[in-house]
Image 1 (cartoon, rainbow, N blue to C red):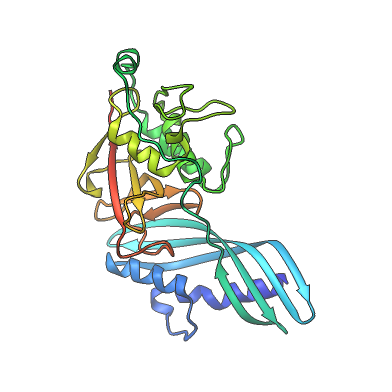
Image 2 (cartoon, rainbow, N blue to C red):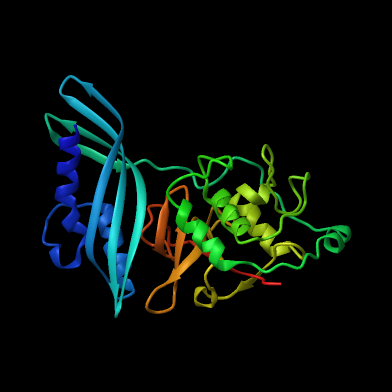
Length: 292
C-alpha cells in the first residue's frame, strides 16, 4: 500500500508547480493553491510531499488508505523566497491498484462548546490592570514549535485552532483573568478553561469586549497587523466566526502569513482562498494585540 501512496504523490507533485502544469490530471487542491498564489503574483517553484498511513484496509480487490499528507511549498514572490507547510488528512481508495477516489477528510471548524460574550465587570477591570509587555517573539516561536503537533501540557481538541492560538498568546506572556467563571475573561487551568480560550467565536467576542488583561484593537486591514497579531475567520459569512490564526511572517507585499491548527499549517497566506472551507461570503476580523 505504501507503493500505491508514493505513486499517488509522484503523479501529483508537478500539478502544484507553475512551470510544470502541463499534466492533464485534475487535483482540486493544487488548482486552489495555484490560483491563490497567482492572484498575488506568487509562484510555487518547488513542492515536496510525504505521506504517513494511519489506517489501511483490504476488501477483495479494493484497498482503502487513510493518511496524513505533509506538503512543503517553496513560494517565490518578487525577490522573496519562503517555505509554506501544511498537513492534511485524506482518504484514498484503489481498485486493482488504480486510484478510484482520493479526498480530504474534513473537520468541523466550529467547536461544540457554548459561545459566550465576554463582559468585564468594574471589579475585573480594577483588579486586572496588570502591567505587562506582550512578547511577540515568544508567541511566534511557540507558534512555529507547535504548529504541527500538540503540547502535552494542554488539553487538545478535535477543533484545536483557538486552543493553539490561546497557547501562543500565553507563551507571549499575555495575562490570564476571569477564573473560575468560564464565560468571563480568558484563562486556562489543568482541567478547565474559559470559552474564549478554546472557542473561535468566543475569542473574537473577548477581543471585542476586553478592557483589562489581554486586550486587542480591531484594525481595518491585514497589512496593519504585525507578528503575533490575530486574524478571525467567518467562512460562511453568517456572523459566527469559526477559525483563528496567528501572524508569523509577512510576504513581499507586507501582507500576513499565518500559522494555524485543526488544519495544521505554517506561513500560509492570510486570506485562506486555497482552503476547502473558503466561500465567497467569508468575513475577517483583524486584531492587533495591545502592548502595555
